Each structure stands twice: as structure tokens, then as C-alpha cells.
Length: 368
Image (cartoon, rainbow, N blue to C red; front, side):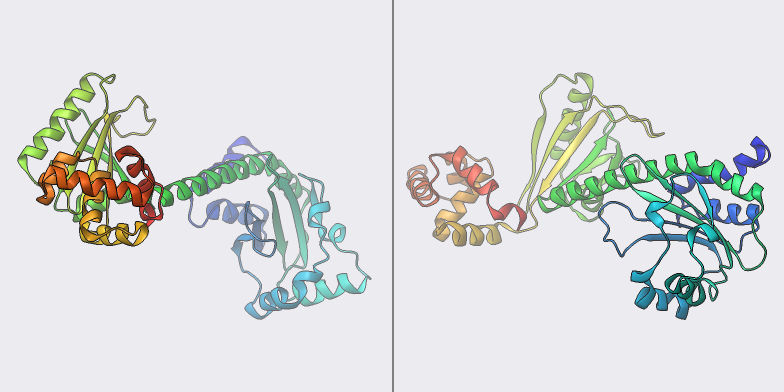
């Protein structure tokens, strides 16, 4: 690289390449043009991938499909290139990578490199701090690379190492987030972030789906969170205003629907975002149940050996109703409901309503 202006032409897309699709496409193409290479590739194996699976990114003309297939079917296990023996950050020429005159090395050159147009080559290995390796490979069909090309490739090493480190860290965070999101999804939790005036600022996939398809909550044309009933809408709005005005206020729980079950927990947020979006005042965690009450009663009956009348009462109790409230909801006398509850506790092993709730929440029904 001759000047800092020249460097920026390569380094800017290298640093931004982790957000490109395909990854680093602009960087690889510009490096190919800069060095007049016919082919440039970046190969690495992110954490968790099997040994025979790598990410292979390239610019230029790849190996012909039959040659590539031959490599994956036969030559892969006999690849003589000393990938992990390369000194990190050093640029190697082809004669330093292959020992010409040795049958295995000559076969690799004859059956893969020549048909792929890799007559001359430069390769560099970089390793980011967690141990992930990447190999930058450049090749030509005719003519060797200049010393200045090797210097240009070597100068990229610290920046490529940093970009790789950022990519690996992002991938780990994405993986952790996907695992957490899947667990939350199976528990039927979603979230919305709200402004102090009750406008929906952001939502996860479950919250977005709920707003789009539920007849209980929706986002109005002005972006306001609205509810099926005006009474429920006023209750949510009042809770949002109270939490936004005083973040030390206790979280508010609101039942949105009883069948299918849907409830909401509103909590003030103390976190601030560095994005361009406005900071939320309140987070609304929404918990739903994809099963109807009838389905849940059947599942409770199967799991704990309850009678239909007992499973209906058990479901009401696990949803936070008192004995008296459940009796009224189910058309029972309070005394009958108490008798049923004793049988429920005996069959489930619960010592009371809190125990019953814990037993159900810890059972497989939470991910059914």
C-alpha cells in the first residue's frame, strides 16, 4: 500500500465487511483488483462448526465445479498445505507452501491448483484472541506477484485480525441471543418497549406477531399501543404513565385475556440505548398461552391424574385466582371449590396454591 488514502480503500470495507452480505465482499474484490489477482479467498471456521465445514468467501473466478467436487471427495484429507504451521501474520509464496518433487504435493498441485488457475499464490494466516484462525489466499493464472503485493497483504494482518475478532464476538452474541430467544419463545414470552406516552418503539418477533394478529392488542395508526377494550386500554395507559413518571414504582401486572390466557408485566427501564431510536420508558413483557383453557385442562388432567372438574379449578388457581374467584368463575360454591382444591393438592403433592403454581410452571406444560 502506497498511501493512507490507498489504505482506506481496502481497510474501510474490511472493517465494515462484517455487516455485508456476503461477508467482506467489497474488501475481497478491492484487494483482488489492488493486487491484480485472479482470485482472492478468505477462509475460516467459526466456533462450533465441525472440522470439515468452513466459511469460504471469495472474489474472482472459483475452481471449476468438477475440480472443487474432486477436492471435497478425495483430496481434502490429503491436502498437504501446512495451514496451522504458517507463522501468524506472515505472507507465504507457493514454493514455501508446497514441497515440489514430493508425490503428494505434486498431485495436489496438478489435480487442484493448476485446474483452478492457481499457478502462483500468496497465503497469510491470522488468528484472533479466542483462537479462531483465518486464511487469506490470493492466486494468479499467469505471472507472479510483486514484492509490493506481499507487503500490501502483510499490512492488512492487524486489521484483518481485528475484524475477525469482532465477527467472532458478534457470532457468539448472536448464538447466545438465539438460544435465549428460543427459550423465551417456547415459554410464550414476548416484549414491547414503550415511550412515556404509550407509543410502541420496538418489539421482538413474538411481540410483533401479537400486535399484527391478536385481537387483544394492536399498534394504532399513530403508533400508540391500543387494546381490544377501552377499559383495558385506559388501564395500560395509566400504568405506563405512572411507571414513566416514577421509575421506582413497582411493576404492574395486567391480565389481558383469560381464554386464551394473555397477561402483561409493565416495568420501568433504566437502560439507555445508543441507537437512533428514542429511549424507552417502559418495557412490556407479554406472556401468552397458545393453548385454549380446554386444552390446558386436558393436559393438567393427564399430567396429574385430575378429574375434569379438578383440572378446571387447578388451571384457574395457577392463573392467580383465589378460591373464591375461581369458584365464581366456574359456577361452584366456595365450599365445593375448597374440597376440589384439597384433592388437587393431594394428587399433585402441592402443599397449597403457591406450591401448585410452582409445580405447574416447572412441568413440561410450560414448553408444550
